[in-house]
Image (tube, rainbow, N blue to C red; front, side, top):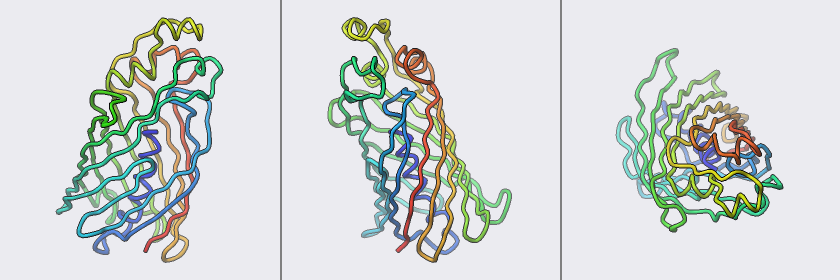
Length: 262
């Protein structure tokens, strides 16, 4: 689900980046369909709907980011900062694999925290391109997963024409021991039920990902957006038998959406 949040964030970034020269981003709503892994580390996929949106109310920029919401309270110069919350998906009884389905279900949690985004360069390859770095960190407020969730990314945005915008995004994310343990570990009971070997996963860098995003404006207000991305699980996450024996360390996603500025 982390990749889905990134997908939604890039959807929102499209009108903001495309119209930065015009003195501020417009309000924006978008919706579409995405293909994502059935569960973390799975090699099977499912279609899910997603939504994104942006609106400025009382000087605060609110954004819908897939399964979450952010609010930007500070936006001065090249720096934007604020707070967010989002749902971190667990694993249900239909994880897309008959063996993994025998492991315990894991409920989703809600993570809340803060973020900052900085425009660090512009005009590198053309007059209108931009380079951003961003980071966020938070903790589960529902008590499902104790510890810190974090991510960092670098995004390069450039227009290909007056109506076409390309964004390339490189990201890294990490999650706490309890998340790694419940989603990627196999305890004795789980091993007996599934036949997988006992395994203990610990926190660290969870994945490194790359996303390409293309926004094509079709009218003054409407645009079509496409996203294609891949991430690779790292460390204990990649070495889990849930991944090595029943899943895939490479995780892919794609999405297609329709957006409207207003």
